[in-house]
Image (cartoon, rainbow, N blue to C red; front, side, top):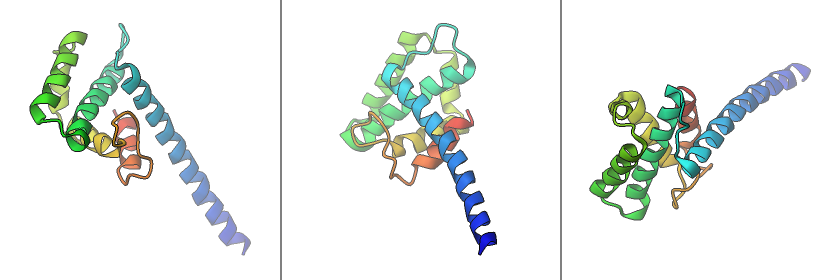
Length: 132
C-alpha cells in the first residue's frame, strides 16, 4: 500500500512541476496579450513570444469572432509594422511558429483575451510556448 502511495505521489509532483511551467508560460503570454509591446532591448525569445501572441490573437478572432483572414492578417501586419519587427516577422512562417500560433489560438477563450484552461489545447500550447 505504501509503495502505491509513493508512486502516486511522485506522479503528482511531476504533474505539479509541469503545471507550474504551464502557468509560467500562461502568465507570460497573458502579459504579452495585455501589452503586446516587446521591450526596446527585447531578446529573440521575448520578440517571438510577442509575435506569437499577436498572431494567436488575430487567429482567435477568425475562429471565434467571425473576422476574415484578410482582416486578421491586416491586424498582425499593422502591429508588426508599428513595432518595427518586419525582419523578425519571417519567423512567423516557420513550422515552430505555425504550431505555437495554432495551439495558442485554439487554447484561448471565446473573447480572445485569455485562455480557456479546460481546452484540450491549453497544456500543449503552454509547452509549445516554453520551447520558444
